[in-house]
Amino acid sequence: MRQFIQDLAEKNHHQATHLLQILRAIQSRYHYVPGAAVEQLARLLHIPQTHIISVVEFYSFLHLTPRGHYELLISDSITDHMLGKKYLTDYLARKLNVAVGGVREDGVVSLDNTSCTGMCDQGPAGLVNGFALTRLNHQRIDQIVSLINQQKPLDQWPTEFFLVEDNIHRPDLLLNQPIQPGSALRSLLKRGLQETLAEISQAGLRGRGGAGYNTAWKWHLCYEGPEEGAFCDVATQNQQQRYIICNADEGEPGTFKDRVLLNSYAHQVFEGMTVCAAIIGATQGFLYLRGEYLYLYDKLQSVLAERRKTGLLGNNILQQGLDFDIEIRMGAGAYICGEESALIESLEGKAGIPRNRPPYPVTQGYLGKPTVVNNVETFYAASAIAVNGGEWFASVGTEKSKGTKILSICGDCPRPGIYEYPFGTTIQAILKDCGASDVLGIQIGGPSGTFVSNQEFDRKLAFEDLATGGSFIVFNDSRNILDIVNNFTHFFAHESCGFCTPCRVGTSLLKKQLDKIVEGHGSAGDVVALEELCQLIKNHSHCGLGQTAANPVLTTLERYPEQYQNRLKEISYEPGFDLDGALETARRMANRNDVGAHLAQIGEDHE
Image 1 (cartoon, rainbow, N blue to C red):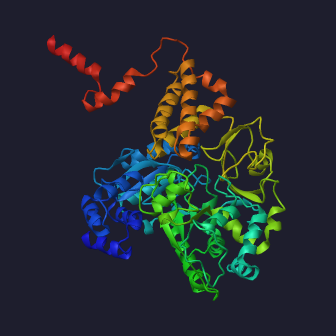
Image 2: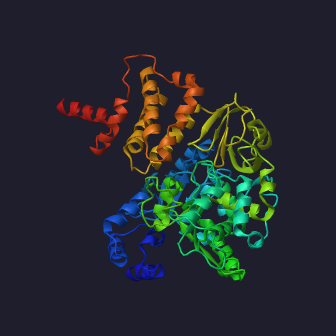
Image 3: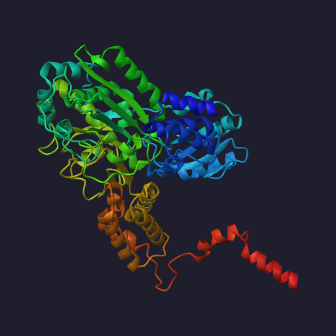
């Protein structure tokens, strides 16, 4: 182990910013991060052991205690539950003889739940040693159990277990016209840097990750940095170091469109990053790839290698004096790292805790330098605009929402997958295309977004009406609203980074308060307290996670108050909690599960 870690440190140039990548490699090899590894890394990277431990504890894919040689994680997303995830997980646990959350006695396998894996269109889904498993069913689980018990290496497992499909059902402006590698860069060099930025401005392109910030203005602000200045030409880039980050940490449940773009259109995404680099004068870029997309890593590295070989990346791009390269960094299971400042902290080898803002990344980002952080889809669109022009893109959409939006549609519809629509398209039209019927409602923008009832399907996909990073989950009228909300609320409580009290404590209290109501122990006063707690979390949390964590409760309480009312207890003096259930853990710890039998035995002894 000592030599392995020594080699890892040397490969990563003994840089503490690479800590997360080093820890991922250790976890992959040993299935945990041993204490001896922590001690050695602290010496090699010149950082405290406490820092390393805090990073391991922050990310859900890293562990300080051994996991199984086969680390099985089953997606706990609402769409997986809708496909029978709970029953399949229980079946898998029985077949493997391992408890959910535990490691089998022989150390061969561990089993646990995990947040959405980005396979919502082909679930139930999971991960084995980080690699995606799709379309799980009883037959496939039986085969997996057999392979694990035989301790077959993953490369000997059937390839169909790991098959991930794009499922593109409705392409439009962007997906119908992918660009050729190099065409955006040649257009940029022919048109000019300022002129290309002007085209992106004319296009009205806004960030496609959900926030919708004006892309051209963000790039402009990043170029200006701490000091004012005119645009550099390609041959003489400004000396101020700047960075480009492509945010591919799409952890919002129900979202998977970035997965598809990186699988089939990676050249265009990387080209968009390179266009941005030329405009702002950056020489280094990063693709922050969510840990659940490990299966894409080698393929994306091959695309980068091809771009370097053909002069589209690296030094002296297209022999025009432009230097820019891209490095792929992997996440390790932390939803909060989709927030741009938390992502930057993670890139720097730290726990992904959001920063105070201002300053914003465009002035103080990665390593304190001006940094552009944009979503995969944003860079994908920017490269197309560089080729086709701003007017081409702005000719579709609405006045405030130009162009198209790529949606990840899943849930209760016969054709889940990728759909691209001009902004301004109605929800009703989208539902018709994906074949949904008897629809109760739609969750748009993931758990942090808005629940839209079946009385609102004339509303439109647009920043000025229904904005979304891409998630579009369909629920038919067989679903229970409170079950959906409960799943989302538990998700936020699990994913809170713990930095601020309103979110750390608030999401936990919200989960318990909602559980109380869902289980039929709540009163009318509990619903009032629930709403008050939602407002507190929303108004006082540090970052977007906490500020939107109450949305599932607030949007459904507004639309379906009777659903909450119907779950309230009828007898006002009924205890507000399950005493026997609350004591169960204590009994188990004291080895007194069957108290009644224990007392009966005492009685017999006295007789």
